[in-house]
Figure 1: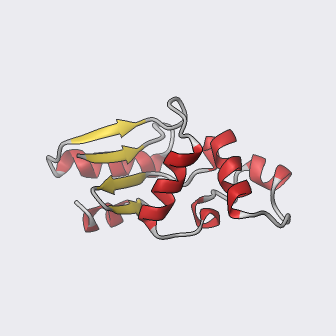
Figure 2: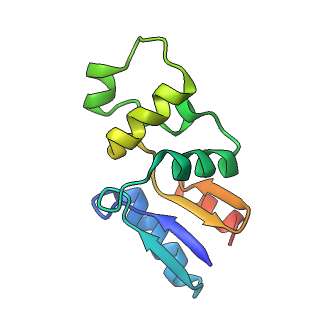
Length: 113
């Protein structure tokens, strides 16, 4: 089953969701701002994406700039920041089995569905 980690207030996330709907694929929507991810879930997503935790951070978010920017952080600290402040997580994230992609641009979703 395809999963999309979605923020309904984000235009790119809504575009990603529309791509899935247009493809007539079955999928689950995880609204990660409401159903927050725990550390293990976030680590698993990062592993499937084959990126570093820092690459999943939205660095233009105010909370990142005020609390984390310019600091030397371990991967564990970055993951902890995203668990504590889920709006720091890039979106949308699409997972299909062992494949995963950040939907920026949204068309990149087509590579794994």
